[in-house]
Amino acid sequence: MSHHVNAIILNEHFERYTVKSAQTRPDKRLSNLSKINVFVGANNSGKSKFLRHLAGIEKLQFVPHLNLPEQWTWEMLAQVAVAFRDNVQSLLTSQGIDDADGILQQLASIPELHSLLEGTAPVAQLLTFAERLSKLTSLGNVRHRQGRGYDAQTVIKQLKQFTNTLLTDLRRLPDLEKIPEYRFTKLYTPTLRGLRNLDTEKRTTGMAEDIYCKRTIADYFSDEKCRPEIFTGLTLYQDIQKLLLGNLSARSKILDFEWFLSKMFFENQPVALIPKLDSDVLDIKIG
Image 1 (cartoon, rainbow, N blue to C red):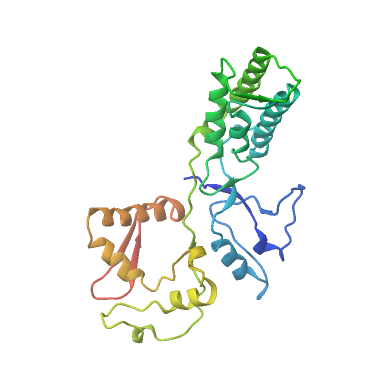
Image 2 (cartoon, helix red, strand yellow):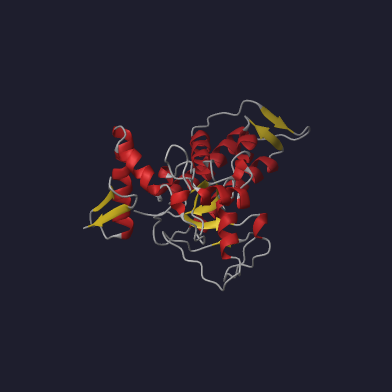
């Protein structure tokens, strides 16, 4: 199982942090991420606050992790797209054309590929745009400057050359067509530092009251718009039991989670989650 994110672009909430990198970049980013990432630092150095800022980002801006051919990097792919964009714009400008059949307007609507924004699909947009230009046979609605002529066939020929170069490069990267419109579930697990007797924290229904979740929301995520899903573990026993006793769809979620635990943490050994009826503790059987 591969991971999705290779780097995260840090927004204005991270201004107080300094990121050291061997490469000079216009943005501040957390790079070289893997499936599991460990933050190390002294007490009260800001580790928890940093993670809360990450969890509170409404839409993640990131560089995806792809299985690209050995000589390719995401930065190279972004430069190929930039070169294509610049060539198209320069060609039409040199011919005195402000736009032709909405080509420049559509091109301007495609975000650059230096990073991706959650919920967008610029690679798919770029491929669709390139396929459109590759089939171009004529220019219909053309806005050009007065007193300037243009050679339509020369424009079409060069547009196709730029497009063929782009598509040839992109077709060497089969993983590109599989890039989805990423939407992430951000899960924040707060550090449980309290020593309260949780047996007394129950509703009249007998279900446990997730006091840490309520406290975390009050302290850190009062803005509902940017609130991640918060998992404290205090209701895990009831949650697992409810899913196991639910319908087929609910039970399949447990099977998927057990498979995830097995693959990611226990070297493919079988994992079983067991909320015993005579206990309020969730047992985990491995192997």
